[in-house]
Image (cartoon, rainbow, N blue to C red; front, side, top):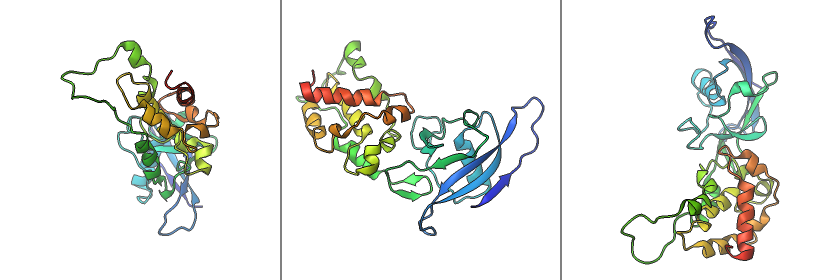
Length: 252
């Protein structure tokens, strides 16, 4: 287990207080490792710092080979989903001060998808499942000459599932997905929900048939892991149950 320490100059009296934190990272380099290994780094950080800031410090000041995805760093792109202290979270939205600091903060890649290096996983199976549910508006007839309007009530029907940022936190928290690579997973069902209940869409029946497969919506075991993991607060389990009811009553 490798250990490294980074010290900073003492903060001014009126500055944000600093503290020591040990980051325990599950590292994997396919060019060097046959299996994942744990690596510790003890850092001086501040209460306003996020897990992403700690990872940046390690990458920029200690070990440039540390590999992870991140883009906007504001919880919008969803690219930095990781397992932090055993739970799926966004590294850019998780403050260090909100975690127990009397023990190491563990960071691992999300589960259920092949690890390419460190915290980077192969997202292609995830996106393939999403593409399979036709995540686009299906309409017939000529192109409209104006916006396809909806009432506020019709828009509210699927508002919750429009919040998805496709971070894969819900899908990779699902125990069925961990053990069965054929299951569509929660996010694909959430993506379908967004269009199935859109009053302007004409492809609901097709999507319902796709999800009526043995690897579709019926594989959900209602453990609520997906709802707990969603960084956007989407009621994922509720959306899945609504799709099940739509299958039973055909869009009731």
